[in-house]
Length: 292
Picture 1 (cartoon, rainbow, N blue to C red):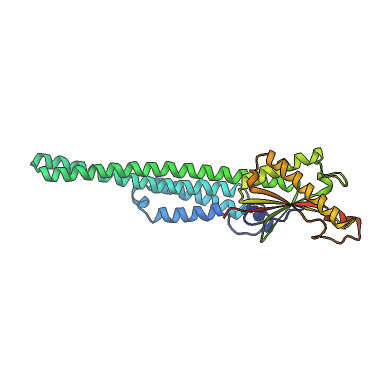
Picture 2: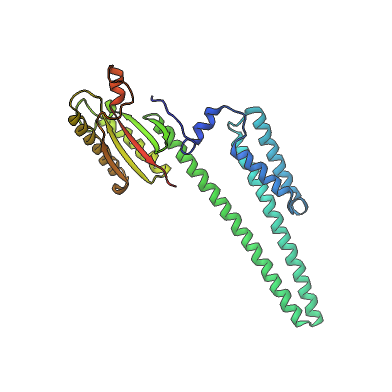
């Protein structure tokens, strides 16, 4: 298994584990903010039961954080607490809208009895506005739920893809983007540029990981050791890079977003005076430029 250098942008889950600190997870921070917002809203007056439920859920998440740290089940409990706080706030807004609707309805009936046609029209408009507000709140609640589900699923898929990628390649973050390094011995036979059967399985993992993460462009760089003629090494490295590019295109990477380059032995990562050093230099690097 190859060592992985994690990045904040693409390996958030692995970075959190590596830190080992007592910083609260993002879910707990969000839950605290959501409860604080709800407790200073109409929820304290119009939805006390829901607000109390949210407080109990937050207390449970805080206790989990105190006992277990940022690991599970703290994030899940914090997410539940956040949702209960948001539900309390939404329930208060709905209750306020219903209260206003009842008041408007009573005033409308009083105006009918008094024969105040003008007032009746104004109150009817106010009631319609109140109903519209309730409908908007319900629509916003549904949209919030949908967005949270979609975001959680996207984060799960990205984390799973990067975890799988970490098992087959070295990954590090550089100024030019995320660099995925695959050993040449895993991909090709000595002096050849045709992909080995095992290479296809590893490149399948690469294609899935970069597709799940999203990218602007991908550069496939072929590298060799310094044994032999420089011109031969450049030719071999280019053919190897093109083989990798062609396979990734066959796995769904758009051909206009991926290109190949052969750098020969011009960019060694180790000394070429030992077998291990030469093995490290024989590699293929994928430079993934992230979406802005």
